[in-house]
Amino acid sequence: MALEKRGLTPVEILRDEARCSICLGIFQDPVSIHCGHSFCRSCITRTWEGLTTNFSCPQCRETKSHKTLRPNWELANMVELANVIEAAKSLNLQQVREVEGGENLRGQKLQSRRL
Image (cartoon, rainbow, N blue to C red; front, top):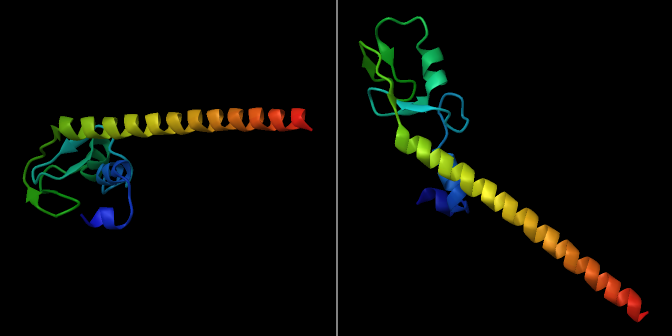
């Protein structure tokens, strides 16, 4: 996979795939449109604001005469999973730092007692 060659972790790959091509942020309330591409609901709604026909995909430019927004539950679950993994990773790193800091302090205390 091309993303793995760039040295990204699996979580980074997941988050990179979970980005809206309109706002470039992590999907918020993702929806799929007529061509199968997905966007944040608010992004595609703003993009199509004022249109009554000829709804064009911002990514591939495929056009339909009527607006179709389908909730993309699988993508929403993937985004949520990426957020949970990142939060757990962050929490784990914080705990490791606290433990390492505590061990270092104990080591320093032992050394000062020996002097």
